[in-house]
Length: 296
Image (cartoon, rainbow, N blue to C red; front, side, top):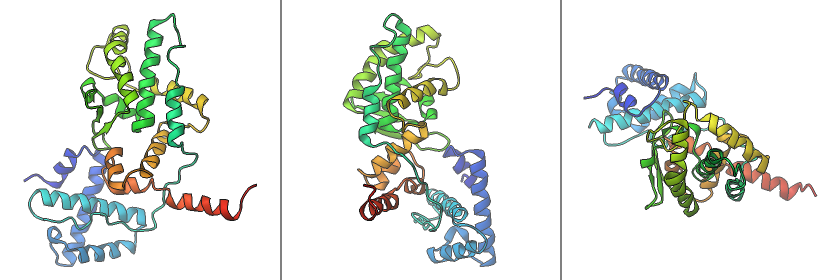
């Protein structure tokens, strides 16, 4: 039988996250001991009593971290055959500060960034710069359609792209789970040209012939991403950074799909992360302001 610590390690959590989770479960076990309760057989009612206990000294955000740890602990117990249900699933304490995103890009604005990114008119006489421009457009597509972050790009390999099925596999990272996302038809065309014609040029130029989808001669993908984002801002001043574009993509997804599907598409390990992107209340407030206090 593997212990809870090993279970968390296999989920690729950071050392700090693992220690926090183990600490929170130790707190639960201490409380269970005072109540003469077996933590492995904790009931939903007992869990609510424990949360009530936590409320006396903790803020909602901290309590939700405890719940998140208990949810993982229950999953671990289920895998080891000690439980059949997860009593902490979808449980959340209200009152936690909600993310508010400003000046998010609409789906049309995101798509405009892709189509606005020039490749043919740049450095016509320099084959390498033209190749990097074509690579950068592929990167832009993965930013605005799949909501990738810098660390996602670093881990991508050629085999992760399935041109025949029109999908791309995004490996898990320290914070996010793996996912497989659909590519837009026009992305498939760009990726095919990039993999077959453009990528070899870049590989030869920088002397890197590994399996990475985006060959680098530096450990930091930011050296590629920074100038791309700078250029995108010239097309739309609302663009701020990689995180802002990803937030725009996720919020737009929430307007099209159910929250569980968006959780999977975004690679969120737990539903609370996806819920933090919900903008329903903010949109309702804007609608009320426009209805009762029009500016014009």
